[in-house]
Image (cartoon, rainbow, N blue to C red; front, side, top):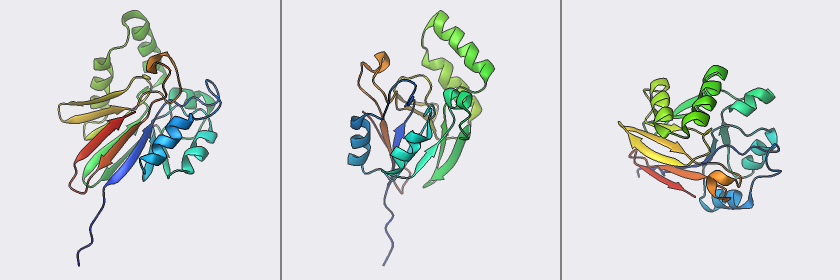
Length: 185
């Protein structure tokens, strides 16, 4: 009798900003992750407190990376994590690179506005072997495949102008055959 592998379902969150912008994770995000029956939660940075990790761990194990705010707060998360699921190479990062790049990005954002092209080119350069790059920082949802790489930003997990005051998260399902199924909420 052959053992049948099941798909792995990742809950994707970023930019929770607790407690600096909101007190708690929105119930819609928590219930959405539970309803999706996620196996693992990937947090793409700017949690801003360990409270976020503990709350998410009540739903599923958590992998988290350091956002620019986490760095300022001294939270001990790695800058990026790379791993493989059914042969699919996945990288989790916040995408702010260094303090210099962060300041340059702020300048470009103020001068020219948001431009996804700036981000995907830097991410592709930093992680050329990733099939999937999950990132945060921009507070804008993205699911876009460019030159063979899937760029996935779940958006911002607290209500703000970038999400029309509807907290956002995403789901990535990887099948044993390496098929990717994505959703944003």
